[in-house]
Image (cartoon, rainbow, N blue to C red; front, top):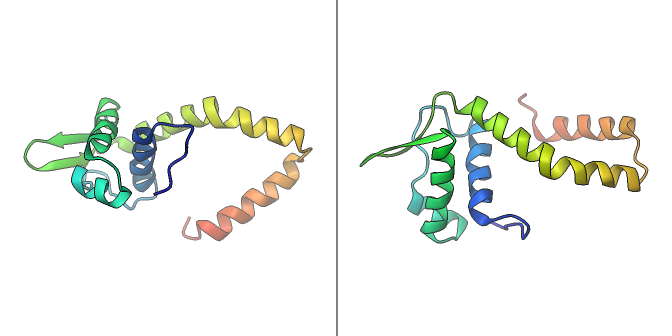
Length: 125
């Protein structure tokens, strides 16, 4: 996985897990990838994945069943949406708005691009 330089890797792994749940690739209440497996797939140290899983546990998005593994919480979707929206509004949206202003991009033009993006990338919604 290619990690962004401006954000800690463990947070990017947490975002990945949240994205899998939001895309319904990982179902609510189901077991998630083990720390070792996700570390191998993402080519990171298992301690980094552990930190991401601890972060998600603190937000009640996943839970650890000792000796069995990690599972998504039944109500994780609402928590993920709240967490991700806060992150987006605080960190990404101001930069996005600044670029819209500097590049003189009209909101109507943006709406058309957004609609096409959704159509091309999320056909099953």
